[in-house]
Length: 56
Image (cartoon, rainbow, N blue to C red; front, side):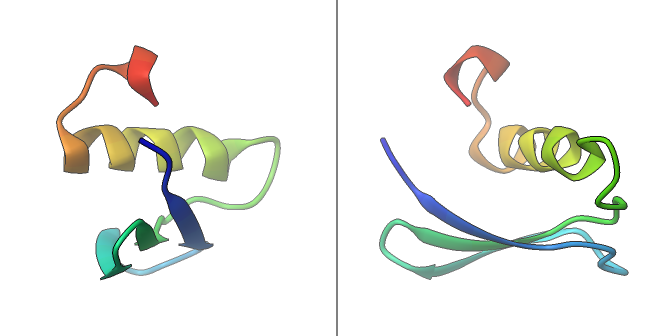
């Protein structure tokens, strides 16, 4: 499965919102420094979809 993700950094509340089929908007509370946003994004998506890390 391939999805398109738009990320909002420094979000007060972390969230995953389905915009339409295959497109999601994700808010993370991490700073865009040294890959922190990417790391947190993966964690949030793992929780939302309930899949193992190897699939993300």
